[in-house]
Length: 586
Image (cartoon, rainbow, N blue to C red):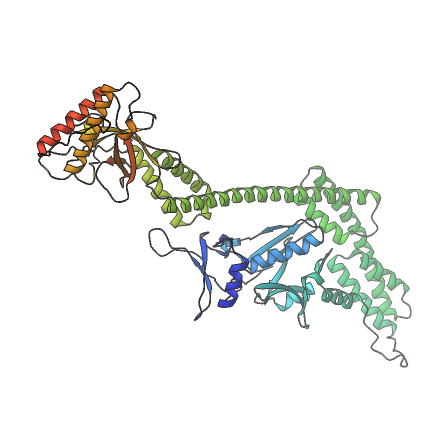
């Protein structure tokens, strides 16, 4: 969390110097890079960088309160708590029925599973394998508290710039008691707190006697006790409690002192009850036979239902064969549950791997876009531009939901720019008419035969970009990717006179040379730039932002004389006097 005071933000910036901050996808954000905003008249906060096109940045995150990241704090605290116990936990920000991200956090490990409800968007389900832990805003009805004895609550308290998890236990007619996460533990019953232990002891311990020790309790007469036993016997038969029916029958046999009418009623009830027990023995035998067939057929759903019924009605005085059948059923169900859990974990791992690859692809797209913004198009060849565009397109397709719409639009723009640069024709340099005083500052970018056929007063130049994006030029084809440009000769007096003098000197040196010609003394200053369509072009005229490259004039005599004739013709057409070159060594 970013500190809200200016003096604290200064310390925060020094502490995290060199780090970058990003709009969290798990907070409903766009994944874009953030910067810190320092204010003295209002609260300091994070802010998005502006889009390259100058438009306001669009981010889908709406919740910005201190509790909007509680699901991340819950995961962090639960991971540390379980790691201290040697458990490897798996977390999932579940969204059942399209619930908002962060409403529910599922925590699973080898010996248990929890579903943490941080708001009331998803109602708790008490019949799944995930034990609910409810926020304070999630309601629980009175019957649920009575039936379950207790429910767990969770709250997060602010502690500086962090959030601390507290676990509470709520029971019927009891106040909620709160504990630190370190005071809790996982038992066979699930999540347990010190309050849970007290509640269970109060339910399993016999209540103290309501009568003083000095006052003896009055025993009811035999007829009254007989009526109680008859009600117990009827209730036990209604619910199918075989053990209770047998015990009550034995209690009736032991009862003495009842009246004749009551005793006759007791005898009839016991007779019917013993017949009922015989029929229940047959039902029990059939129940185990059906369970044995379900195990043999590997019918897990039927075996689970029959085993639940067997454990509820026939858990007493089992034979060795009955214990074997129940054990086989339990093993079948456990194996199926384990296989289902492993399959679910494998699916989660696959989804996690896919999600991780998508996040890496989104980070790659953002990094490449950041580099392209500051690098600029002017220092990039068409091959380099195509490579970046292809890389952006591939990673944008892998990023999926982790890439913001603004970044996708920017990727599409670079792809279109690359396509235009590859499909467009090479621009040709214009032919300067002799009846004009100045040359145009921009060449014609339309395709024409001038791209391959030299004009009347031009110099052929081969232009390319190196792997650093720097423009290069030569007077002959030295690289396969180089593009020929026919550079117009200057029409103003100064450059023509200097060029005429250089050509005259080079021809004289070439004719009289007994050694190497000093061709480095005869050069043309070529200015190179890139058009908005991505084409390279060059000229001898000045242009703002152009890259200057000195081009050595050819040292061969025939091309020099040919170029010399072009220069002389242009000077005569303009009426520019020649300045003969003189050798200072003579």
